[in-house]
Amino acid sequence: MQNDIQNVIDKIKVVTLLHQPFFGTGASKLEWSVDNDLTQTACTNGKFIKFNSDFLMSLDQPKRIGLTVHEVMHVYGKHHLRRGNRDPELWNIATDFQINLCIQDAIDAEKQRRGGVSCMELPEGALLDDKYRGMSAEDIYSTLEQQPPHINHRKTGSCDGDGDGPTSGSCSGDKPTAGNKAGTTSDIGQSWGDVIDSPAGSAAEIADEEQEIEVMVEQAHNLAKSRGKSFGAAEALVSSYKKPTVDWRSVIRAMMQSISKVDYTYQRPHKYGHHIMSSVGAFIPDYHRENVGEIVLAIDTSASVTWDEVQQYLGECQSIMEELQPAKVHIVQCDARVQHVDTFEMGQPLSIDKVHGRGGTNFQPVFDWVDNEMDTKPMALVYLTDGYAPAPSVPDYPVYWAVTSEEQGHLFGEVVSVNISQ
Ligand SMILES: [Zn+2]
Image (tube, rainbow, N blue to C red):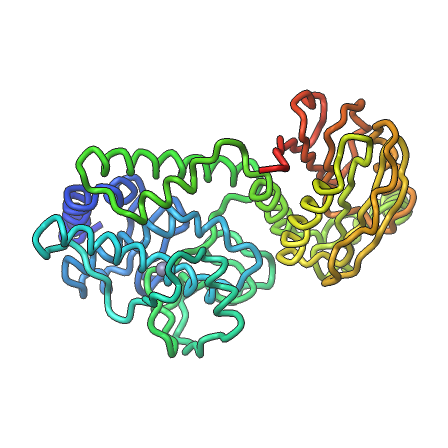
């Protein structure tokens, strides 16, 4: 990096650490570089902040810090991990509304401390609207979706439109990622300082990255607090990351979202197709799946799962399914054997009339049902259980266990301890 830019960046870090230690911590931990092809303002994927040097140099120092802090807040808010299937451009707008209110809060708090002075300022056109105060990025997105802003598309960078695969990383996706645009302008303002998806793909990688962020946010908060420079939005963020027990909904959601990033088009066809193809040594991709495929939600209906628990589980699954849009969802009720199956097409509400079963616990029948009754391999199977039973034989599709008891170390796949009453 050129010396003058390096000096500018060093100064941003030092001043931010001094006056806004909560953000300065993150600014110091991220990797900084100039990339004029990737972005015409700035962007982050949770690991780096990349700047357009002309844009950075065109700003005065308070706005440079405002831009930096904005990027740090995308990372603190895990926006690079939470987009799911949402439109990247609208996601950037929604997250900007959420972030800029927090930054405004921090600016106001600093001004109170320093007699009306703040080291930072939001650059021109910042998406700032008090009506979004207290809302999550997801809720703001849903609101915007109902009345989408008119977006003016500007010239894009060097890596747009390279395919229609799932988005991960900086230059993929079904439309140019927001990271390579010159700050999306719209009738509601300008979105500069973008967030792009994390390259983390697997559920484990995403969980690791989330944890790293939570640790970083906590360190940042401790530093800010020790210097008397914390503020409301920082407190709120830290307390949202301090959960007494694991939030199984977000864990399962993250897992499922990681699945939806996998390109299922090239999965082997299930059952007979597989034998035919392998017998002639051919591998033929399955072109029939246009969406994320079918999902099996298994419910252990042995004695101890209550009707309330089942309803709550289905309610959570419903919202996850709305994001994932699987072609079909099969709800399989099983105690010691499969008692009842309901199948729902895309978009149908998930509901069951009653719990069938109440006998002992056995997991294997659900996996046998998948083998015998489904035409395609499921994209994933999520098993809600509080009972103990021997592990079934390992299938060749992802399995997630939402377990309400502790002694399930013998299970394969991803096991999430759930406290369903939380
Ligand atoms: Zn942004």
